[in-house]
Image (spheres, rainbow, N blue to C red):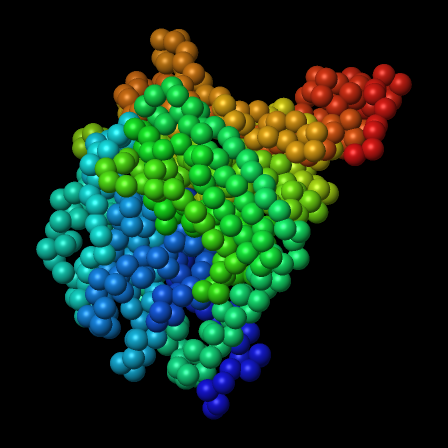
Length: 570
């Protein structure tokens, strides 16, 4: 067979490597010990070529995908040619891979007939990494509060685990069986990718495979250049504020500018707050990954990310910036600012691409965590994000009850699974009415999720975007911000958005309400029929229909146009 890959062979390889990644993810989810992985799917997997260029990735947390190649390059820099078949390396250092320490990336070189042909990688969230609190701590002010920290580290050599490293990992977690079980699931995922890629190489050969890969990369470069060149040159700027850093009440500024110059897009984060005491600092690698994700949302979203993607985009991150975390900055909630940053970038791009304009979404992961370390009752940890509302855009309403952009395929744990595994009852999981921003195209609604604690345990919350809720565009209105209510057994009521782990007695009820998306266009341009449909489906109330949309809804759920305001052009 010729070593040159024709277009058909290139398409076969393109789809095959994505299929390989899907199989890798299936292996990870089915083998993992933690519900946050096998139900929540807080993970990502990838196949890369021998130079560390992305080839195939699977659904999961999209924020991870744009940073996995950086982890592979770190392994290559440290180990060079000292890699052999069967080796596995791990890394979780916040300043190297950009995330919090819970996200452990496992990497394995792939050999074919003795020749290095690529890498398999699997990143997954470990429930406990030895921080000052089990699960995720909300109160850290230093990386040294947040758990064990590892640079590129070989833990398996020639298929044989290096026992002293496994021992170290076991001694630095409260739940060693779960952590090692999840690590082994990541390794199984990489082995799956090795086997599947080997099947392809046996059929077409390494040379043809590499030719196809280069074709895939070049196609991505060409498509990105064409997409950016088609936009009008210009500069755009946006800024917003996080509620706080988790340990103070001061808002945290996030600013960005975006410039389109020919085939180039330049993003500058100058003006963003410097490093903060709380744990919302983020490593530069993950910041760039987020910007890649926002870019991909608007530019060629139907094409998979490859080693040829993003060459049109350059990023400027000042040294003294919370998005360029340096030791000993705390990074546990690194993703908090990324949701707002994504909305700012998409708003900038909406000016350059008005046909794809989107209002902001609810933005944050909105995490509710509960756990117990009582060995007599059984140790358990539940950490999950909560869905919310996305922004409306040209031609359509925002999605309701959808997880935020940062988390992608991450999911709530189903109530049936939650109640089976943990001593908690899910008393309500519903659409939060009137939370979406009014507009010609309405913002999506957030959700209400209510937990009743059936045993004494600990709970923690991290909810954001009350001070900069999802904004509307083109006269659309803002979505509602988040709101939480804790009702203690004695009747005391509290309303914290962020709360470090604290003990609660059985019978405590925690009600969480996430924000909605911003609206797009004037609310008075929304047709009567669509407003009526929103009322009937429970997205908005009769009062909102009258006050926000100027539509009078009758008791029998009809529209009285004589009492309603006339519709206007959008």
